[in-house]
Image 1 (tube, rainbow, N blue to C red):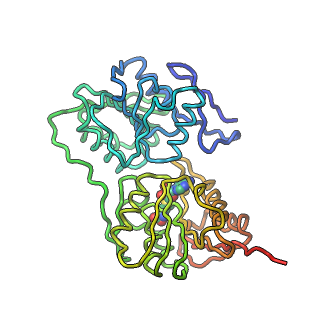
Image 2: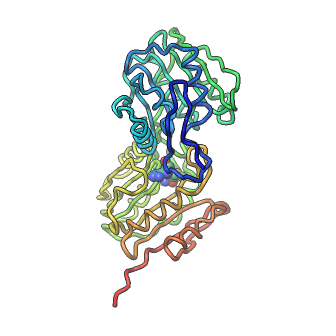
Image 3: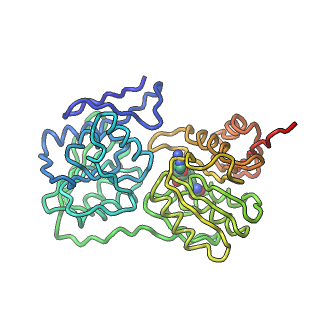
Length: 385
Ligand SMILES: C[S@@+](CC[C@H](N)C(=O)[O-])C[C@H]1O[C@@H](n2cnc3c(N)ncnc32)[C@H](O)[C@@H]1O
């Protein structure tokens, strides 16, 4: 059964992940959250004025809820994280306005007196965040990084040292480690280089913010899908689900006139990338492009769409799994019109064809490479008579 009571130095808080699964062993916090909270309570005074504590990359509120008394700014990329933090604040009767959620595409405001940063999976994201934060820090700012040892490469620690200043690491505790950096005010440090534009050999210029999928090149799965995009008729309504930088939707938009393409991703940076990629590549196609930072398709009307394109994730943060893909297929089935198509690209070993059979009752393999398959599933037409 899932453990939900997190014993912190400021008291026990109740936390749930999203999605919550009673049978899952995964908790909404990890040993690195525990370690950093204990360190802050015992060693650092955290003498910040309200609004001067910045929490970066919290997952489900494991840092925000216990530190809410400091009225932190919480810098997040995923709308699922935003929702989890709000719900967990509420679950613990904490005034929801005590934490100010700030999208990853926004810049925090100075002065920042303390930063607690869960080290993200992507070094590019960490580099972007450290370069953005640096000029906003007070001279005496406390900067603590935290992560599970297995997810903390040496290169991440070196980024703290190169961008902020002299850096040390703690002893490992319950397989987690802390990083302590001290601001060196005399260094000249370049601002964040992101977003960057990647020129591809398929005629697309992809604009990528720091946390977008396949940051430096066209992903090979995406490429496999580009070779097997479905024909679409003029005026069709399409969703690029889990759009990342929007490569799939933008490539499709070039194949027919007057499409309506809706780009959806739960990452603020992904949707900002898709917006910028659309602006960089689409000019006279007459496409109507709309964008939502959203967790799958709850915001989309049932039976309203002709085609869903999807290159589903197979990691949820550091957790490998394909629950998200299945949830996406279920959502896609709901929003498709009868006769509408879901076209999916995925690593062949994931066995997504079986999930499509379960949800749609049919599937066809329309393309394949050594590693990837491109699958199609059609929503059954409503039977009459
Ligand atoms: C494998 S990447 C594909 C990105 C892009 N379509 C491409 O082909 O380059 C999967 C994307 O799904 C997004 N994603 C994951 N879970 C999601 C969810 N529940 N709702 C919306 N997007 C999600 C991720 O943020 C990521 O951008």
